[in-house]
Length: 437
Ligand SMILES: Cc1cc2nc3c(=O)[nH]c(=O)nc-3n(C[C@H](O)[C@H](O)[C@H](O)COP(=O)(O)OP(=O)(O)OC[C@H]3O[C@@H](n4cnc5c(N)ncnc54)[C@H](O)[C@@H]3O)c2cc1C
Image (cartoon, rainbow, N blue to C red; front, side, top):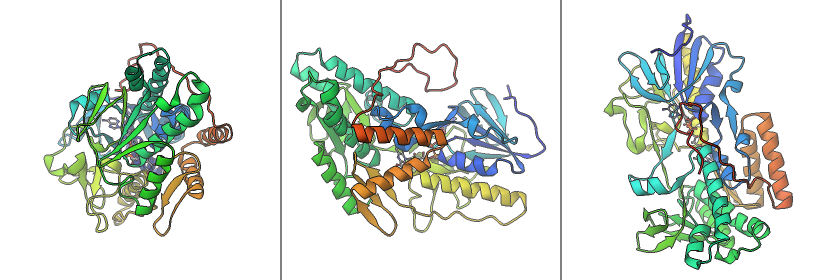
């Protein structure tokens, strides 16, 4: 069965994925001489850098997602379909989705990445990833429900397992989550749960490398370590999690930590629909592309964003899997589609590094810009500003700003609600419609 789409007298560009890369591309192509079909398993774009604030009950999920239909409301050549793409048939230039088949003239893969559990099925089953807003909400419910339960547990060991949280991965996500949890322990728990002995609450951060924020500057790593240590986070460097059965985390040196919650921020791996040749599969599940984002060994198929591995002289292992790289690739590919239509020469992609940053609680952040690196309060304001202005939608910007202002001045939020959706009776073609908790 074919998905119902108007047959226009224009070449059809089908884009899989309404993330940073896909949106940047479709925005530029909207209104141009192509029919653009944007496919995503969700009907919204997710702002992943702020997932952790949803998980920590600092922001409502609706503040960091944006409806795709609203984004392209007035673009007549742009069509949106919410469905999961399962397979590509490059020979027939067709996509097989849960809604049916879609034909394409050009296909763009902007499918991003998923959590990497490094093949450990037990950890994949028990640990909590944070790669979607639903997972962030699940985590929020889990944390709050466990604090509630801990109040009625008399046994110290058992209570510990409900209170302690283990964060795995000392990159920006792990560092930001650990910092937020430590602040929740310091500012929120004593007010919300006065019966709890907060000394019993431990936040562990486990990092495989010898430093945090590996890949950022030495100063940023040192400062992140200092900030988190001052917040009381127990940091274990050069340690790996080898097993987790839902109750106890085991490390490679044999140490065990009782914890009912393990937040997995230890890495990502690319995932694309089946059907592509093996010749284009690169390391880390990424798809090998040339400097024009064209997939190796395939005509008319392109890949951008986290899923793509494009080698540049300065980036022999591919670009960093960051929002900026994804957006810049999306824009460049859209401009090349426009040039192609006009018979102009295509322009190869060159990545412009705008720097990286991470925040570690209020008034503390680290910022590495190409020519300058700084840490502390000013860095924190820069972090706030950059993230606020990167959010899609004026309403989202205003709501997030007000939330931050409120949180900053009161040291409190009123979003600590455990809301569990009832069983979903709507047949949504999404892997994310499972009941929360
Ligand atoms: C917790 C977290 C924090 C982060 N913080 C930062 C940060 O501070 N700064 C920064 O620059 N980067 C950050 N990143 C990385 C950044 O979010 C990614 O680099 C960026 O999202 C990549 O964009 P993308 O378009 O390639 O993929 P994504 O944004 O992941 O979008 C992929 C889209 O494809 C859809 N999709 C995938 N497969 C299918 C399919 N088969 N069928 C239909 N739809 C599909 C998904 O639903 C999704 O909408 C963070 C990531 C995470 C997880």
